[in-house]
Image (cartoon, rainbow, N blue to C red):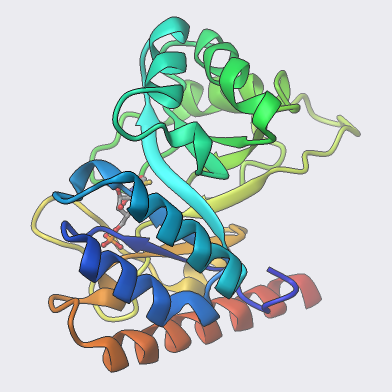
Length: 248
Ligand code: S5P
C-alpha cells in the first residue's frame, strides 16, 4: 500500500477470463490488491491462474480469492487445497465466515500457514439486514486475536480495533480492515448491497482498504479506458481519505 500509495482493492466479478484479465491489467497500476471470485468464471483453467500470478508480479498487487469459507475444519481444508481451483496454491489471502467457530481457522491454517498465506474473517457485511452484528462481531474479533499467526484482518464496515476488549486494556490490535460496499456514484443495488464513499469508510469508520467492484468496471468490461480512469479516481479518493485519517 505504501509502495504504490494505494489502498484500493478491485473486485473483478466477471464471468469470462478474457474480460477478467483485461480488467486486471487495466486497473493493475492503481491497486494494492485484486479480489477474485474464480468460481464464477465460465472458462476457468490453470493457465488463468498463471496469467493472474504474472499480472500480480507485473503490477505489484496481492491476490485475494473471496471464497467465504463457512464449513467444518476438515471440509474447508479440502475446499481450500483441492478441487478445480486449488485456491491455496495461488491466492495470497482468502476469507472465512466465523460462523462454525475457531475450528474453521484451524482447518484453513493447516493448509495456508505452511504456504505463508493469510486469512480475513468476515466480522460484518455490507448488505441490508446482515446478521453479522453485536456479539457475533465481537466473537469474530476474539477468534482473530486468538489466531494472530494466520488471521491478518477483517472484512468489516468499520475498524475492529478495541471491539470486545475490556476497558483500559493496553493490548493493541494490528489487524487490517478491508471494506466492500464502496461507491462514489450509487447508494446501492437492487439486491441489498449498500454503498458508502471512500471518505466515509476510511476517514469516518477507520477502515484501511476500500474494495470496489461495479463502481470501477461498470456494466461493460470492454471499456478499458473508462475502467482505468475509474480506478485512478477511486485510488485517489481512497488515498486522500487515508492520508487525512493518519494525519488527523
Ligand atoms: O460484506 C460484504 C463482503 C464482501 S467480500 N459485501 C460485499 O459486497 N463483498 C464482496 O465485495 C462481494 O462479494 C463483491 O465481490 C464485492 C462488492 O462488489 P460491488 O460490485 O458491489 O462493489
